[in-house]
Image (tube, rainbow, N blue to C red; front, side):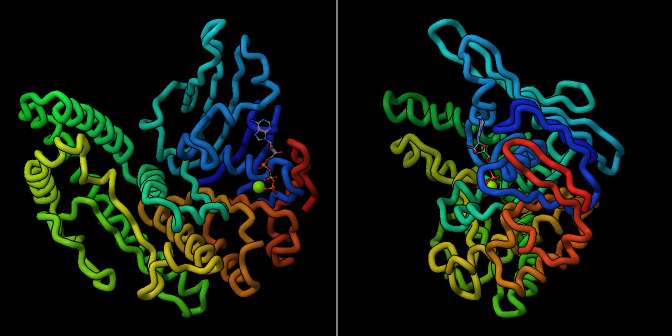
Length: 404
Ligand SMILES: Nc1ncnc2c1ncn2[C@@H]1O[C@H](COP(=O)(O)OP(=O)(O)OP(=O)(O)O)[C@@H](O)[C@H]1O
Ligand SMILES: [Mg+2]
């Protein structure tokens, strides 16, 4: 799929931007702090309805537009795009509005697909994008929640129903945790947990199964991309560590990381049954702790080069290359599953790679229909690639189109 037009209003440092987007690679060139990453952020927002730079949508609203706390400010990201069903228009509005003299402002989000208001869960998957930013090394080196977030954002774009189920799981989890806390503080009838146990096991089992399948498929593609990027020097492995492991439902200690565990033959009904039994077994312990201790909300995913866990021992270059392999795998996976290429967004990707890896990356980019790449200097790219791309010069919240 590809964008044909992008329009921003009061988004970050863009008071107003209106651009026709060509169906090819676009190089966004500019000095620091001009707005290059912000444009990628806006496009990724259309795919995931969240920002990769902040959890607080308010930060996306242009400072100057938001300066007066007693008046309303509206940020708009509007795109015309093509997917396999034809041409569509997707609009996101982030509305900052006063709540009363003393109460400051609140932010509200509206999503419109072809002019009709929709929820994020309904729209996700209509427009897909895959994103690489160098700061994403936190995905490997940070806590497991970063890896779960990445998994969720990727899977939600591809698997119909994933976003809805994840949200149902999270609601059940919140309710269950609140009840566990209540039982732990005040006591009471523990059978009140039955309903939430069943809901958690039902939604959780499906999430686990989807993750098992997706991670196995992503590993195959990431391994291939990584071998190409490193010219066969490194074998990348993705290890899913489910907090409730259907292969070890009794919660035995995980096997050595070296051992590859194939969970793809697990069946949904068995996972659900095992998960429910584990919740029952852990019930008194969880009441004591006031917390749900197993389930997809505690899953992890590790990245290994051979036997080495890159999250702990990866060099800077190894981590960047692994991320890139993962991103290329994500792009290929989206294409495999949906039949459509996502729009590829790569922030400062060339500055990170040695000459050989740059060439290999550009080869990998020949598939997708549209890619937006930022750089401070187009000379990081091969002359041929630059010739085949469209160059946009980004300066102080404006874009100049060059003739290239
Ligand atoms: N809500 C906002 N309102 C106005 N300006 C903002 C807002 N949020 C960020 N900015 C500013 O927007 C500018 C552009 O940021 P952006 O990250 O897009 O730059 P960049 O071109 O990618 O730079 P770099 O090469 O350093 O990565 C920065 O100066 C930043 O301070
Ligand atoms: Mg930037």
